[in-house]
Amino acid sequence: MNYFDWDKRYIFQTYKRNPVLFVKGKGKYLWDNKGKRYLDFLSGISVASSGHCNPRIVKAIKRQSEKMIHVSNLYYTKPQIEVAKMLSEISLPGSRVFFSNSGAEANECAIKLARKSSNGKYEIVAFKNSFHGRTIATLSATGQKKFHKGFEPLLKGFRFAEFNNLESVKKQINRKTCAVMIEPVQGESGVHPASKDFLKGLKKLCKKNNLLLIFDEIQCGLGRTGKIFAYKNYGVEPDILTLAKSLGGGLPVAATIAKSNIAKALGYGSHGSTFGGNPVCCAAVIEVLKTVNNKKLLRNIEENGKYFILQLKNLQKKYKIIKEIRGIGLMIGIELNIPGKDIVGKCFQKGLLINCTQENVLRFLPPFSIGKKDIDTAISILSDSLV
Ligand SMILES: Cc1ncc(COP(=O)(O)O)c(C=O)c1O
Image (cartoon, rainbow, N blue to C red; front, side):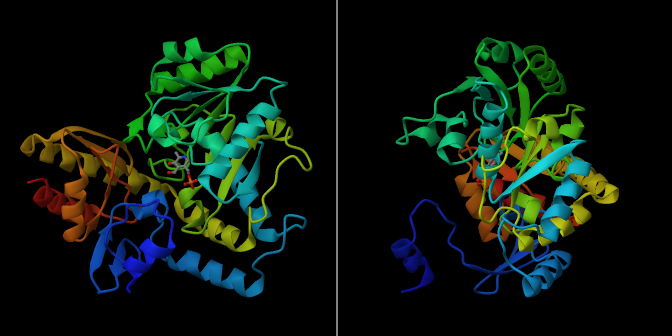
């Protein structure tokens, strides 16, 4: 028996894994058990954005885990309160934070908060092709039938509008609507950034109809788009913001951030999480935020993203299978007019990690520390893999 066989025997077979056993990570690289090195342009799907085993994060985790790993949310702990203060100050002025462990849970909290703070209104307008998580509520908010199959009946109270289409949103609003929930850049659906006019219009529409605006920045937040939060590219502030993935530098931690007049609707005993805001995770978050909320780094992300897209556009001239290139910052997708699976496989063989979503969109979510040389390497491998 080897690990691949044990996986098949002992683990729920919910993931189609690549045939590799990773044993080590450092910065932008991963190594498998045979010593082969891979350039990671996926970052664990936007998690290891600050690099694998970032020394500052490792040190903070080590220091905190030697001191105290867990108490309970029945007590105060320093790292959690420090992170809440940092997040509140850099995200939504006058906001408060609820901590949980995953993106789905952060969105679950946002959904509960939207309902609880809306005096009996409970419907949420979400978007076609969105992805908000795998719990029943977040699955119900996800606008893709393929994820719903076999799990019905789903939670009622979600309606779906066309992304980037304000008229379509208007049609879904009624007297029961309490909120609109959206990814400013849809990730899983194949990297679709919202247009500026659309998000601005959405904000106005929410104000007019007294609806909460929820931004799911679980994939696109925390520097990924070249701004600390994706919404800063649009000049449109949400009422509720959800974060996870890269927040803990690889540790499971998530945050639901809401303006305090809204957050107060979840009072004592109305919501909770055993591990949420755990001291070790929060010690990691402090270092992540210090690393990422840095003008120079954010500028590099923006510039490298532009350079990457330019190089991809050059490739597009050569390869007719590239239909469209979309992206913002270092969140980039290439839509192909053929399935992308084999290309991902070829890149993998050549030591480059990317993935394919929606069958035909190659997705790139590299760590923030990459430079032009790494982009050139990735482009060269991709070019060899497209033939
Ligand atoms: C935009 C978005 N929301 C929510 C989630 C769910 O996060 P998690 O897998 O941590 O529950 C994801 C995961 O890919 C995501 O991309």
